[in-house]
Image (cartoon, rainbow, N blue to C red; front, side, top):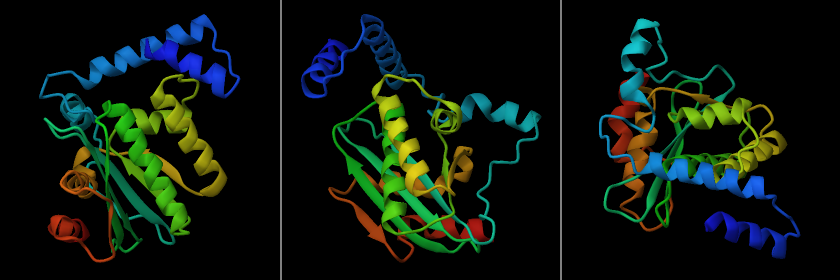
Length: 225
């Protein structure tokens, strides 16, 4: 019903006529996203950390610790948090320089609750625009949701809400942040952004930290040593 309603709105407000195939494909993607978001198997995290832990060790994957960006670049770690029994999603993002020093952090809250893939895509959406507002260049964005990095680097044509947001992210980055890119990392290398995202859900507005907030001070220190 949502897909049909969206097709109707596109027709009225944007003079875009969706084909029956497009409406059905959007419905299938939306339903699959809903099923994934409502999966109750606790051991399986949305970043696939449980299912990939053993294979990453077997394959010698060393991308499990946060690493400083190369000289002259910044790194922005991004994550989203989906607390149980809550109608909101928290976003956390942290910028650090090539020496590993904390530059700035930000937390945000989003209403209402959405699917995991849409929430993670929105986290990147806000991070990209924040970086552009700060007039920073040469930024490496890191996320622990593999579908985000995969779509950003080689995906297209997804007609779901996730696809619309990611297409906007790609266009924005290609326009304003041409020397930046998005990479997938393991959850262990994204603890700072995750801690910020969890903190965000206890606030009713966005917060920007020029100094290191208490919730990530130990994590920052440990990753710099």
